[in-house]
Length: 117
Length: 114
Image 1: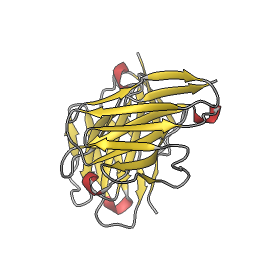
Image 2: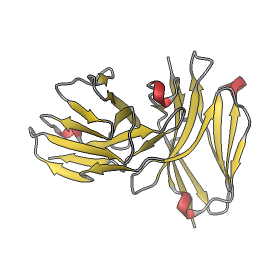
Image 3: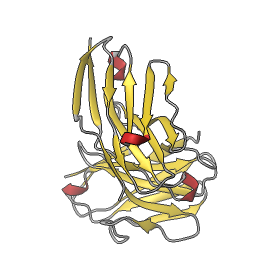
Image 4: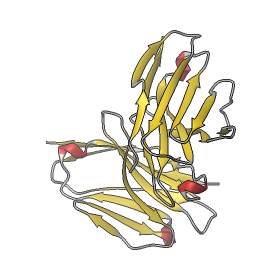
């Protein structure tokens, strides 16, 4: 069965610190998709990144970077030089099908990140 | 990515009543998904809505409680029926683009039941 575990319920850092959010997943499929979403206090869900299981290249986008390791079934998210605006709940999610094939998202429990000035 | 509009954005309802949430997309999409996020919790899929067919419900969710309509490729509604305080949640609709595009979400409907 599919499962996503975000063991860190809450993280608090001071601005400019680097922070890593952990995500561990379980799936029996060889083809799957991993996602990170951000949910700021306003409540909307903002898509950050999607990775396919056959693409293990790490990705960097500005201050954000993602480390995908199939060997440990992990898809961790690092924010470099955190800012107050990064304060939000971050969700890791898994889908075993592409969206247009009925790929529903299985979400982790979320990690609430608080960045203090 | 598609622009998704959800209405209402929030509502406070009385126990025993029903509320219909609308989701409008600015482009045609095959599948739409409805999720629920209970207070302080993660998101859980309620059902998948395909145009022209019955919605597919996840375990723990039934059509009598959460009837869904999908009259065309740009619109869907979710009704929360006979509401109780346990139904107080954020309800979100989600769509994706063509091919392997990721799912994007509407801004959600914050529902409180008194």
